[in-house]
Image (cartoon, rainbow over all chains, first blue to last red; front, side):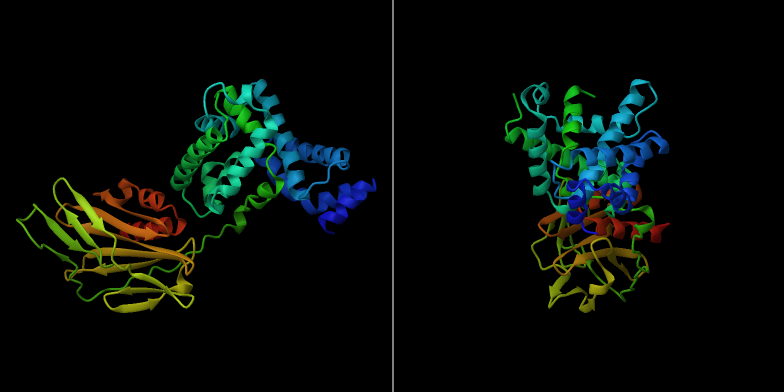
Length: 186
Length: 201
């Protein structure tokens, strides 16, 4: 069943939509969740919650990419789980490392959160990512969206950890310049 | 970490799902990095280095296998990359031509796999490595050779719009194979350097 057919089930409020999604994208979403969530159990719950959120948000939403949409829901729920656990001082996996790395992409102290609405920043980053060579874009997303380790993300692109780390550093610097050029500086 | 980096991180949550999906991690079992058998060819006698002028140690000129000129003094090192490189794409095929010998390497390389050509001097010592890789549409080469006078590796290469040259230090491994791959920014170079290091170990 194609994405459009599945989305049609959502619009018809046909609950088979959830099971079809689980069959088609369940393992993918589980892999996304398990990279981030504090435990397998948390990961499974994130996938279930993501499917429920999809049910509650389609309609009115009509995602262009159902797999990407479900993955985003799952990823964000898993990040929330990590934050809950981190607040309880149970570690945060890759997230603290990723946040440290993203410091280098912040245009100027105090500028982003005060001057920019989240969705505008997301759109700007989308434009930035589309401008990158594919290899660089995939590496960035695997590191900062899927929260793969640098070594793992590099290996997926045929790069060693050192090469991936260097490329990520350059990409963060490019992102910083891009955000500044788009006016994300006070 | 600052609140700004958290804002950036949160903004990533709303990226275009299509972009995100295209970057879906590859399962470990599917990541089979293609390895090629080590291609070592022994050149009979390749007289590629010559002291051209000046007293020893003052000014050295070398010619690389790829036909590139190297100028080296105590305080200066440069490589002239303007000559025709050793790799050529023609009719959808990739060819490596060294010392008059032309080899079709199209099926031996890809974006992640390098073809390694190793040349030996008359004493049987490794003199130079040439790495070639990529596709007929996006290919390049790197030469890594040993500067006997200075006891260090030097390298030069071109890939796409990128070109570079430099010193790797006395120990290729310690100097970091990543240095070359990083400058040239391409996976097959890293693969080729790993092949070289494997032969040295």
